[in-house]
Amino acid sequence: MLEAILNRRSVRFYKDIPVTDEQIEEVLKAGFCAPSAHGNAPWHVVVVKDPAAKERIGSIHKWTKIIIKAPVALVVCIDRSDFDHFWIDDGSAFMENMLIQASSMGLGTCWIGIHGIKPEGVNAEAVIRETLDLPDHFGIVAITPLGHAARYPGPHEPKLPEGRVHIVG
Ligand SMILES: Cc1cc2nc3c(=O)[nH]c(=O)nc-3n(C[C@H](O)[C@H](O)[C@H](O)COP(=O)(O)O)c2cc1C
Image (tube, rainbow, N blue to C red):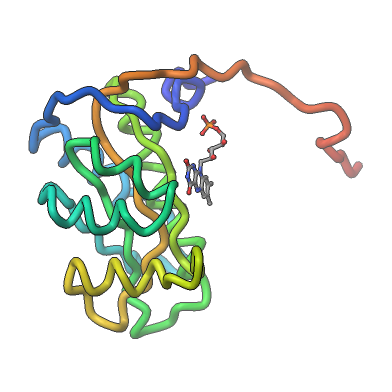
């Protein structure tokens, strides 16, 4: 199985080492190669380097906190002004492509779900929209930190879990 898929793990602690613009671009390019419904490619991505913006988004709840110490956070958005039935699916495909690309480059990431979450009544999408000055027609799917892992849980083993594969025919 593709090594980058097995090596991709959720990294929640980062070293104080920057990532280069070239590295960021390679990761983003993978996102923009994702499949999307009707080939709409409705993605926008915000590269957040600004410490104050990371701090603000990081303060939403205990899971977003992990972006504060990472050098960069990538925010996956979808332009919902057109056909948007599959906006979560489209954004998720973009996200997963980026995570695998980052893994292949030896960089750490962690999917942080955003759409629809309201920890302690705080609307995560609204806080991010305001912090990053995003328009109302952008749906915010998820965020990932991007950086060098300070703690890495170890690669996945390929597996076919018992009873989870259903063969017809
Ligand atoms: C939709 C989605 C939302 C997630 N949200 C969070 C999150 O808010 N915080 C977090 O630390 N991990 C989050 N994760 C990562 C999962 O916890 C992680 O993928 C899972 O435990 C398996 O571990 P692995 O990624 O190392 O294989 C999310 C993953 C997905 C797919």
